[in-house]
Length: 623
Image 1 (tube, rainbow, N blue to C red):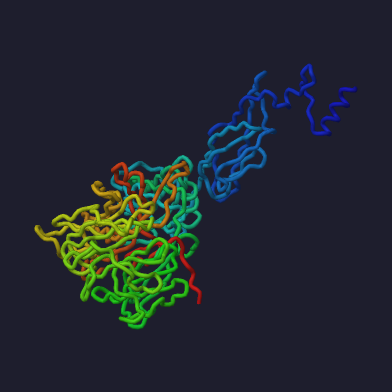
Image 2: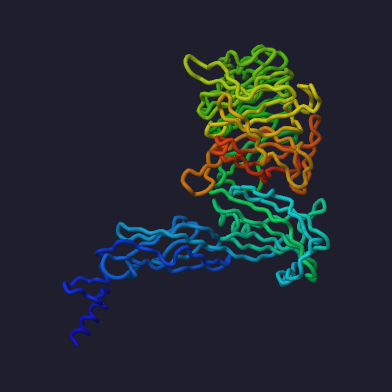
């Protein structure tokens, strides 16, 4: 009777007296002698039906002691997950979020001991495309027919192996329907993803179909696979009766660990020419906004090539094209001219193709067109636009300096030494050179990529870490030629992207994957031109030391089923802005560092767009 009373009292007090040693120590409740802990179940996988109640899993923590068998010590443990977007713990029970899967580390801690295991939350969803009409409710059952090679559809866009930032909404999937197919099943699958979309032929174009994932579907796919393994896209087609099923060749899409951030300003031919901009850090708008046009300065007929200070507070832009040399110098937040636009007095001195010092106090420019007197790299005050000095030895009247680019450290400038003079916009036989600031000033230039007959090398751009550069190379179509329309650095059809380390004697590396077109492109004349870097170094995965960089460029390649916009006198095909990822460590290994490119979805694809320039942030306009 006394034992019953003690037990009842212990229960009321929340204590346990079950199993005591001879000296009175509570052996089942004590952690004395605990050597290690383990989590059960290890490497678990739970399934989440997307959009529904969260998935749950209860863990158990087992302790191993110096004396006695292992026992459950879950009540003594604290459990946590290293990806809070995936879900969280209430005690020992994990509850997932409603719309995101993925893989994360689960850690249990007991005093100074810890144990870790992996948890995979697999998102499963089956949806009907809202842009497709009359999709049968039993669509899945129509795909049980026999396989038929003659009915294979064809996935056209994106390219296989593309890597995208998770916040890049607006991905399109383009496909050719195949023979007699009217109903389609598009799946996105890997170890943590099983999302299937049933659709017709939405947004038909040029004999094919364009599917645009709606927001929830995109979130399930992109957020679940942030920094993870590739997602495999599989497309199947059949008819209304499901009489036979054709399956397209698969392709893979991956997502970076980190979002793309920063601001992008680019030049467009729409609306009488303008500079557009987009804020990748915070904008939820589907497309970019107009920043300025020729109306910004009286006497300016058009606004073209431009450069932004790294902090996004100042912009310098060419007005009225080649041989003019006048620039618009603006305070970005107020849109006010920092110096009057004109030809003398306090107006900015002439320059074409500028690049800002990292601190925004000055910019480097060139002017080798009609009336030029100084063919070197020239430095300009970032507030007045007045030339303060030039860097001797960087150019001559016969071989002017061109296309300057400041390194992120502000102590190096890469540029082009023109081999066959024309204008700054159009020239031939360029070489990539670099000058470095030291004592007493800017040093003797060194050659990074030499000039070569029949080739033109131009548009150097330092990587965000300053270790290497991207540049363009064009090939003259006529034997023995060093300057003609198709190799004059202005919308050259043969333009390709290369990388080279920022040191003399390094071997250039072609960015073959970024240069490659899609299944709808023929040949290699794709005008892959004017590379410019997003300003930061990002993470490809969550692993320590993982690095990734993004750059944009212009290209006349087909946007899947879409033809490029109309061009001009230099190239009948217009350009859209494309973006590609780069593994910076691959450059040091001498390997192609690029991923296949994809179209920036924030631009007007009906007009030609060029010269994408990046800043760390988009400065709001204060009226």
